[in-house]
Length: 237
Image (cartoon, rainbow, N blue to C red; front, side, top):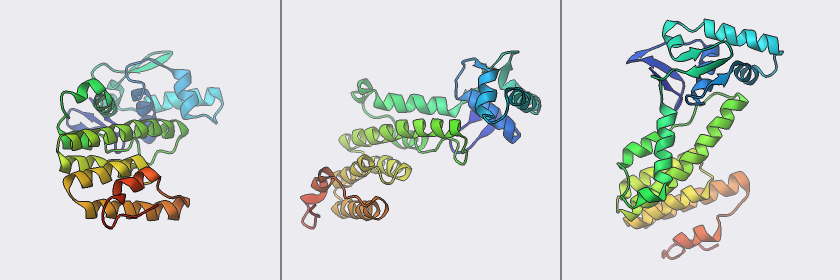
């Protein structure tokens, strides 16, 4: 069985999608985020239904577990006090986290970058978009920070390897995830310059500068100005 958390929730048994009620989706996602660790029922109930009295939250959890169909229940090992993910369930986020950590591991950089666009695709999806529960937002931000650092590091490695198209793709994925983050913009500008496209580098700088002023009233840092300042038409701080 496979649980998808990146780009939206889904549960599949083999290639067959499994329909899961919304409340049960939240239980599956919450347990899946804890990998194979056993999660106390009280923690699940208190997190998913924080405003409900303890007895009501526990009843809501029991109801969500009951509403899981047979295939859905196969994804969990349900005990009287704890719930854990079944051993044969794969979760896309776990694989994506391993990919991000491999990219950030300096020992792996000596071996050269992994296949570029496959890694970029894995690191490009948001975690549970459209879920606004506090626990889901916290997990989503943790994943966003990890993948942003990985995309930027990966883009730099791809530039060093002369794989400019893939470097631009990695940097653009980082920029798309956070358009106001300067380190992602710097990664994109460096990739354009290394590829020999100063006009693209200037366009990226100017677009970022306008948005930064408009939304935050800030200027790019001197470091970003220096990246494009040596160009004939390069801006000055």
